[in-house]
Length: 244
Image (tube, rainbow, N blue to C red; front, side, top):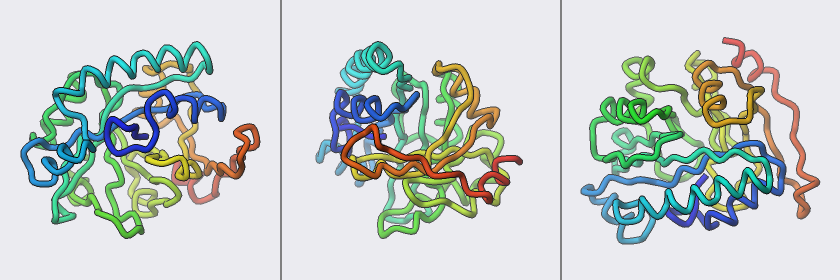
C-alpha cells in the first residue's frame, strides 16, 4: 500500500492503524520511487507523488517508528519497501516493481534486470506489480509481462491480483504469485489478499513468497466497524492455481 510519501491518501500512522485495527498480521508499505529524469518521473516529483533522494531517509525513519508501533500495539508485521516506478506514455514500456524488505535507494532509471539484482543484493525480493491489463481505465504497466520468459528466473513473484481484479492470465501462467490491495485510498480495502501460514516475521513472510507457501482469499471490508470485516471463501479456480 501507499502513503502520503507518494500518492496515497493516508499518512503512515493512519495507514498502520487502518490495517492494525482490522486484525491484519502483516502489511508492506511500498511508496512509489519514480525515475528521476523521465518526463513523467519529473512530473511525479513536482506533484510530490514519489520518494526522492531528499525524502528517502525521512521515509525510512518514520516507517521504522511505525514498524515498532505496529508490533507493540497490534502484533502486526510491517515490511518496508518501495515501488520502482518506470512510467511511459507507451504502456508497453511502463513497468512497476515492488522491492520488499529493501532499505537502500535504488535508481529507478536503471535497467530492469540490474534493478532486480540490486533488490536481491539488498536482501529484498522483487515482485512484478500489476503486470497485465488491470481491466480499469488507467495507465497500464505491460513491459514486464512482455519479458516474462526472460525474467521468470529473476522475479520472485508476479501479482495475480490488484485490488478487486483477479488476473486470469497470471493464474494460468504457472509463475509464482502474490495478491495485494495496492491501496491508495481506504475505499480500496476490499480486495484479494495473500494468506501466509508461517512465523509472523518479515524474513519468514518473504521466504514464504519465494517458496509459494501461501494462499489467496478475497477480503470484503463491508462495514463501518473494523470488527465486522469479512473474508469470503477462496474460489476453487484459484485453489487449483495455487497448487502448481
